[in-house]
Length: 253
View 1 (cartoon, rainbow, N blue to C red):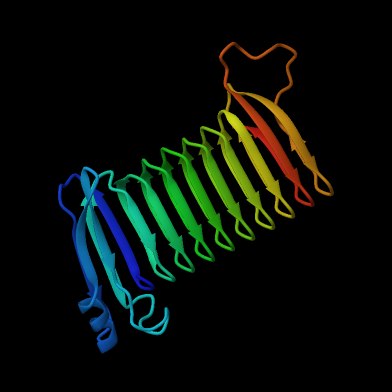
View 2 (view 1 turned 120 degrees about the vertical axis):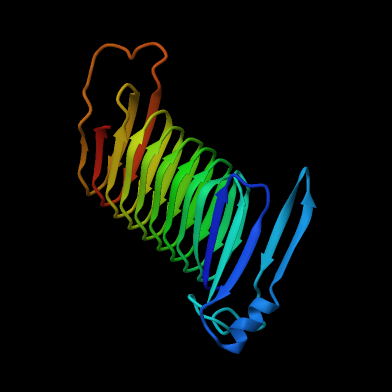
C-alpha cells in the first residue's frame, strides 16, 4: 500500500483477519479499497496472505497518508513483508521474520524472532527485540534497536543510530549521524563515521580489544586496564572504531 497507515497485530490465534478502513469520503479512496486484492495462497507447510492496495495512478496521486488504514490480525511468529512509499507501519506482538521497504514512512516493531531486513529513505526505524540476524539501512532516518541477538549491520547517511544491547557482532556505518551502542557483549564491533560522534559501551565481564582512531576528534576510554589475562571463557569484544572528525568514547556498560 503506497500511503496511509499499516497496523499488524500478532496474537495467540489461528486465523488472519484483514481490515481496510477509509477516513476520507473521496470516491477514489473508497474505490481503491473496493479494488484491493486480498487472497491466500499455500506456501510450504503454511499459507501466505497477500494484501495489495494498488492505486491506478502514481504514488501520492490517489490518496494521502491518513486516508486508508490497513489492519492485519495474524498468528504469533508470522513472517511479515511490507512495501510502501509513505505509509507508517506499526507491528505489535511476537512476529517472525521481517522484510520492509519504505520511502518516507516510519516503522515500529515489537518482537521479531526471524531475520530482519529493512530499507528506508527518510523514515525512522524503531525495533524493540530482534532474535536473529538483522540488516537495517536508511538515508536520513534515525534507527533505534533496543536489543539484538544476531549479527547486525546498520547503515545510514545522516540519521542517528542507537542500539541499546548487541549480543553478537555488529557493524554500524554513518556519515554525519551520531552512534551509540549501549552494551556490546561479544564478537566484532565495527563503527565507522565521518563527522558523527560515537559512544560504545562494553558489557561488564567481557574482555575487549580496542582499535580506536579519529583524525580531528577526541578519543577517550573509561575502561579499567589490568595486567592479568581475562578469565577463561570470558566473552571477547573486538572493537574497531574509526571517525574523521567525530569524538569516540568507550565506556563500561
